[in-house]
Image (cartoon, rainbow, N blue to C red; front, side):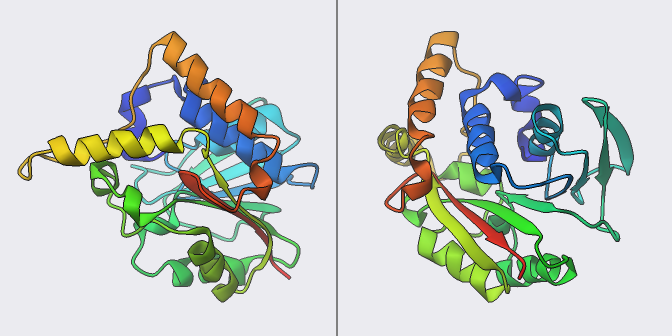
Length: 238
């Protein structure tokens, strides 16, 4: 979760339909492959690293984000969870870049730097927001440079020297609703209004319905190369 959105959900991210579904998709992509050591780049609150420690056989996780006020250490599920402002010499079995590459001017260079430092066999799971036609004040608020088609993010991953295993879209089931909401937002927004996040706390019924829609998508999302709100790529360092 981006640090700019941390106060919006407080401690409720694990129950929010969006983050609950994204972690479920991440866990499906991780599958049964060994992922003992996790390196979470641009980790923000460390939500995904923490959930992996709590719900999988991962044994340690390090979160990297220049937005942290200082380096710190926690315990999650009896396992070490480290927060660092800058990367060190950490080695990992699984590297996460969850909604990170859209934040930097040179996405290939950033990904290539972590790919070059990784040992052969290291897996990378990358997510990015999909489709520039979905651009909204949410992207402006989070300081995004771009959104991606699946082909575009796969080209970035390949250019960084990684071998792609899976490329797919997620949140296809809620795409029509989100597209309509963003269109209405674009028409209604004043040009002088400050950009704001679209993330919000929903009522229990809305949260449950949206989670159910995403849950029904989970069994087949890995073959969805058509459309969704997020594009995922799973790759490996050869």
